[in-house]
Length: 167
Image: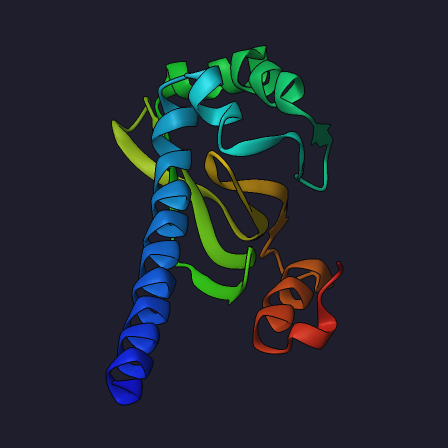
């Protein structure tokens, strides 16, 4: 029976790992539709109540500031003009009830003059997550542009070498 119990325990751990990864993928996949539809509550609920989002231009702290970002004139102007926040396939590093998720993102904008779309920005994002009673929630997100400067490359390097992460 011990062998059977050990196999069941191993399967349960593997299933939990797969379920956690799928839940984190769903959160990353939900971000674009939430902000591009202009839905502040759906966006804010991706974070813990005191979670933060550092865009390098501004740092939003707490769900109220995240909601305000979505409702703000700058963001509303982007989505009224036609915009898509595209999220790349993430690298997921699970550690019990915490996770670090890193992925590329692009902001695509409609060019009304040429009736086409262009990639406006390409960046790297690193999210810190914690398991809560309501499921996985972001505690912190950092976005850095891949514009040839060091911050974006450093964030990518921390995915490969966790010792480089800012915790």
